[in-house]
Length: 78
Image 1 (tube, rainbow, N blue to C red):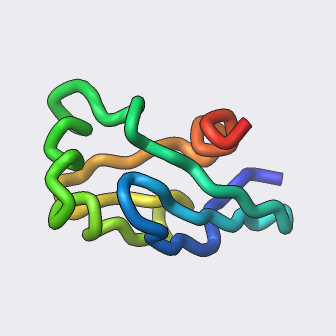
Image 2: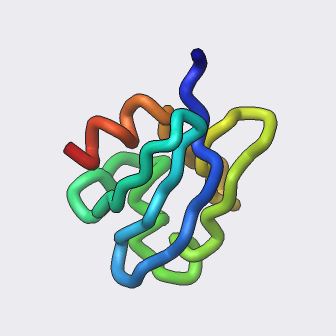
């Protein structure tokens, strides 16, 4: 089974609640992951709040084109 994100909810700060197609759910704090040219713009709350699920990619994406692989998201939650 290829892992996909099926739901995303903003919880405040840089924390998102995520659900996956295997039935698991978790909360992920992105505070320490927002570095580099693609992710630093997400430190702006308005930009971070544009998060949504891409049906094409099966993961969360932001309006600036940033995304994280579902497997990486699960690793962040551990």
